[in-house]
Length: 80
Image 1 (cartoon, rainbow, N blue to C red):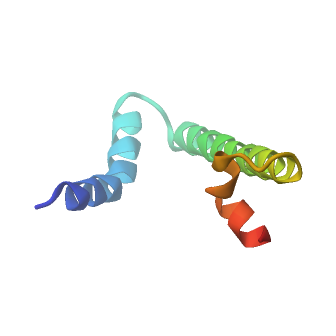
Image 2 (image 1 turned 135 degrees about the vertical axis):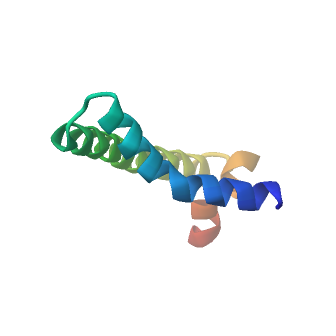
């Protein structure tokens, strides 16, 4: 089994293991659903903020002197 396959299998087993662990630790279903919802919400906020910052950096870089980091960016390639 390659490391890539191992990571895939680990990702598949992570949610049930997390639920079982939290249940055994004394958390009710409501508590772990609330916790997972909070984690999901924070991840979504992180993704939106990251996209905003990357697009802003790319826009600023293209308007200025077009440094190498902006040319390698996916958004910069789409605008050209």
